[in-house]
Amino acid sequence: MIFDPIPAYRFLTEKPLGSYRFRAAHGGRGGAKSWEFVDAAIFHTVTTPKLRTIFLREIMANLKESSLELVRNRLEHHGLLNTYFREVDGTFLGLGGQKIMFIGLWKGNKPDGIKSLEGAGLTILEEAQEVRQASLDVLLPTILRTAISELWAIWNPRLATDPIDVFFRGPLKPRRAIVRQINYDQNPHFPDALRELMALDRAKDPLRAGWIWDGKYMPSVQGAIWSRDGLDRAWQAGRMAGDGPWGRVVVGVDPSGGGDDVGIVAVAKYGDGAIVLEDATCPASSPMAWATAVAKCAERWGADAIVAEKNFGGDMVESTLRAANVPGRVLMVTASRGKSVRAEPVAALYDQNRVRHLGQFAAMEAEMLMTTPAGYQGDASPNRMDALVWALTELMLGETSTVAMFLKNRKR
Image (cartoon, rainbow, N blue to C red; front, side):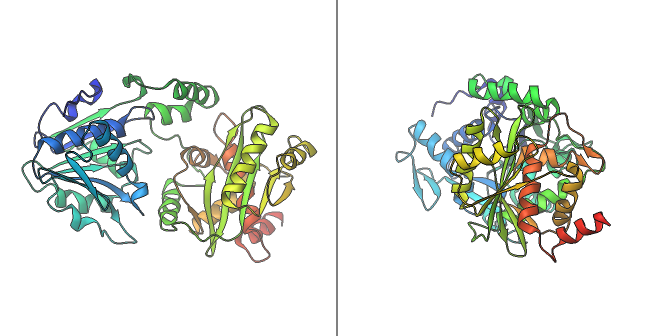
């Protein structure tokens, strides 16, 4: 196998396995971390007979959430698929006795994947920002048992207090570790389309752009009504939801008041609470363009209703949505209170663990973490957060609901 990595990633292959205990890379989007780690893992697997290579995530409901498809594509690219490796039930088996496997560490509240990790020579911890301290405590003594065993980690930083950051970047660093910050500017293949998106992000919200593209920590403010831990719990609970079934589905829409993005968020009733299905927010390029994006989101999830703020645009918002043939009822609402007042009862649902997230919605969560009782502390408008609040308020509001009681108390 001939493999010439991008210069920033040569630390993955310049020395054989066992030269380090840890090799890690953190940074923002566009740094090609996933591609280069997969290629380097394949290189070591091919050149090390009987090596067990495991791609690991904190929680992996099914193989679709793993790097299996990327590994398959890269094996095919290098001419190794069906020549040196064959795929059997989601595992790649090599002619030299090698295995490439994909595992989720936790299932429910148990580390069910830990037994499969014993004896692994190379473990690649993906989306490592999601890893809990309890996972690291179980993981490290399990996998670092042989002379060549190494743990590789890839992550987009969130908070300095996240366990993976404390482990690799805290005051007491592990021995025999090589850690690199790698961003888009070290990727010679960084696509122009992402460059345009990055420029837009920087113009709209430099703080958030620094987190997304430059690998800085997630912007947050003291006294935010949502917490990082609460959002993590919502995501972890949502990962267990699978494909539903969902109850009533509502799409919240926050039209643009100044040419910025139009917030579009789909939520559904699930159990005794709700689940956030998608953040489909799009640029406000034209009324029909964003209305069409709303219609497509509603169709994807079989929405029963669209709830949209009419403060900006009035009747035009409703007529544009109807012209786009959105499915379900169109409900227009008026923002009579400030954003943070509307958001607080929804944040209370998160505090009660009644809201789940089907995935991680980084841009929306960044807005949520910048919202305080005194108002939104970011530079741009929190369109995603507003759309979420409209949707969850409509979905969860009832005579005996937490939201309804909260609103009644605020009015007294």
